Figure: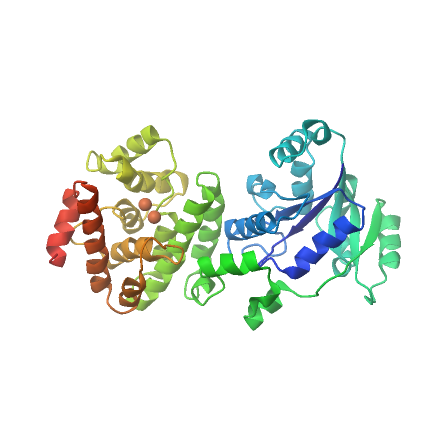
Length: 406
Ligand SMILES: [Fe+2]
Ligand SMILES: [Fe+2]
């Protein structure tokens, strides 16, 4: 097969990206397109607005919802340690074992998936001029033909650039006609106008309240932001889409609430973002990790992941801060004498933007003004749910209820 590979930050994914994909397929020069959202882009390390999992799922969900035929989304960069230079992405993606399995998983018949494939790197004409400055451009050309999008009226001399690259590095460079809107992700974010994004992207952004003041993480240190981005990638390997995006949402909301209520924003961001990191581990593993952090305080299956998460954070994420670890440990039960940080993570877990289990408007309003009132409302709702389901209320939660006077 002739496989087009389209890498980018997609921060956000917009109609211009879709035009690129559609035009490449329409040109007949490729049989399919694999979209590869960047995880740790060499040019934009930690400077993308959203951590990689948001961007990956935004693209994947949109490609699926749009019913685009022969277009697939790859998470190959999540497996690359450090900066995911294009040459490393291509090395991993073009590996015969990887590509065969990837295509089969995406519904391509075995026989076709196991063929020898030709790979084409899709790129805009503006990036062709700087191609030689990429990391190991000569090696990139060993893996792919550069397939350059030529927009009608574009004054870039693609052929001159291509001649120059061929002379210096060899390799194949071809072009195809690009039709469709011209827009940029940075422009869309700057103008705060998402009309140039496909509907599923707009829906995704709305669900998770992305590209808002909160997602800018202003007031968080660069180190905390880097950790947030790195942990997001690490947790991708342990959590499914819904849970991963939920736990990241809690991090962003916790950082905001920390600002409002005078807690440490960095700690709130990290504690919130990783609070559910252990939730999808094998239950026996959860029990073992839970015991390591909290002895036999937590026994019920549904809450094991909170102390287990504290151990996981300590061991796999090198978190030594007791306040952060305790905020993770007690996010399910709460307890008497909670710190502001613990309350923030507890509340944010119940009301992050993607939560829709009930009308949360009142608690969300309270959380912006009076954290203890938001706690009272949240814990009351939890108590009611437990009574309805006939579940025992944990002694730690009972302490909390007494303290809150409910
Ligand atoms: Fe949880
Ligand atoms: Fe949670």
